Image 1 (cartoon, rainbow, N blue to C red):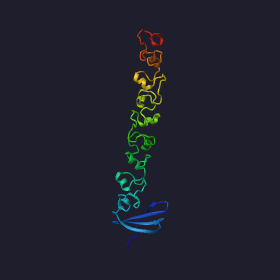
Image 2: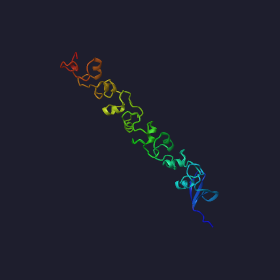
Image 3: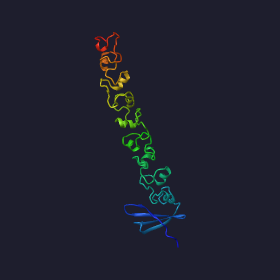
Image 4: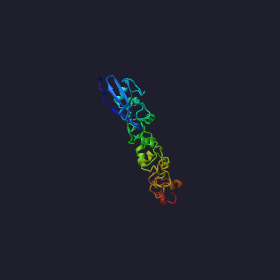
Length: 240
């Protein structure tokens, strides 16, 4: 007389229908039960067969702990066999717990086993939520990394958050405010000052007592305190 196989409940859904399965020599025996008590249906399948068509044999499903009667155990839209082949967890919709399920990562091209695919210290899911690219550390290519943009409050999807003609990365480098078009309040936008060579952090670049914008409008040199070289600074010269 054959000994009764030892099994364990592996699936428990809202209907309390469970699956018992046992490894018996060259076969795996499945018994559908209610509450893991009275047997209602049973059949024997070859250990090499793939009853749910997910790419895993019954023996492999037993080894992986996946549901042999459901091709997508975790409900993430990916077949169990495909997940096992690619190294993702067929029991978890989001293998790396980064806020993006495995199917979304596959679609985007990010790495479903790495929570930060581009190594910019922002989780892939957080980047997608902000409209950033989880595959690029600097999504808008402005010279300022996505994490730095998040910290600064700038727009990581726009290279020039304040629209002053200077990229966020350039402004961070020279010390101007990437959220203020005119950091020094002299009436000249930061981008223009960088083009003119004036100091976008000072309203009076040459220290002659005249604001940069006034000098430009007047025709004097905002980078030369004595534009006409007469020994009198522009701010005190009646005819500079």
